[in-house]
Length: 260
Length: 252
Image (cartoon, rainbow over all chains, first blue to last red; front, side, top):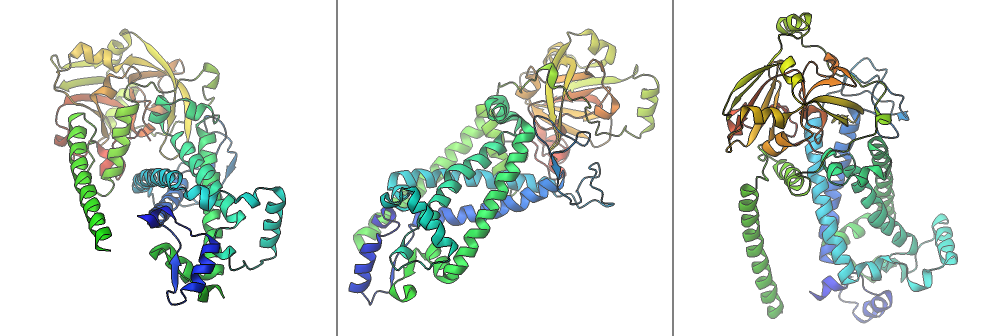
């Protein structure tokens, strides 16, 4: 139970414990709940991304405002063929239509994401996971600290031993934006496209400025999330793919040796 | 160590038991309050059930968003070809004077209506959006008679749970639950933007279900039937949509 409450061990504590117990070669890195929710959301995210692309293919045009269709001028159009023959794409052929199961899987994965996300957020608040591991450390809450962290990243500076055991400022800010800005936005813009949900809560779509605006924003936020995923995976490769992936599966990371 | 693992085992056991019992209770309640859609089976069943149950609990009596006249689309997208059948062509040539709507099933007085009869009932209008599952949409003023008004004329029997509706096009049919059928914005629509409903938008008669996506608003309606057993129709999934891989409930 106690491990649930301390997902990341304080760097100073690790340094001493690593020295003291050279025999035990691993230390606690991610709590069980963080690991389980991480992989459920990973699975859901791939399902949402794939089915989102399939749904997009049935009408690869985007609009602004309440309405938009083949007779109105699009805000922009993605230059790909479509799975429906009414869309003017400029291609002489139509792709296979996979919208049916794509929509069903999209919503099923969305439900699982929302429920898992809620569990994670409640856990994060109660256990102090957000406070300890994601909110910037007191020393880092300044523009100067932000600036030096950005410079450090741009120079590909290797983290020090202590730094490697905790999330740095840029990681913390990125995770916070993903958890508290991008995910809520993608859920909101998604719900704003539901005629039943907007019947119950009209402000969800009216505040955004219309159904087609919601759809276009949903697309952009999804791209931002996909970009995050890309950078996240690249960073994992740079930091050591197996050690980081093992840590997220078993919850434990190899100590001292890995850091050297 | 054994103390911890025994405690974990105990809590794990309790949580599992509570979870199973909770699921059982939830399933019974869901059945009782009609929260289970006809296409609840299969791998996407849980998602379809959550979509439908959530709507039943949160939006059962909500009204679809209505728009000011200024937001009516200049060119309402006609996404339909006229049915190619000889029967439809003949009816169209006669200005749809011979178009008939049959209502039967669990009603006290099964009846057949002409368009003129439907036009003689109280007219209602709504400026609502048609949103296609593909992603496009348009806003139009839809005029017709509330389905609930016509259903009162034929007298729906209390055991009816679903309204099944059929197009003149073969194999084009769908269904909604009785609450959606009685909803004040569910219309038998015969006019759009002040004119007869164009064939390209589903004329002469389209069932408008504005709280669901466009495909639930079936075009060229000729037949309504009320039932307490949706399994008797087609493959028992509630409409042709799930048979083609689409959700029966299309509020999202």
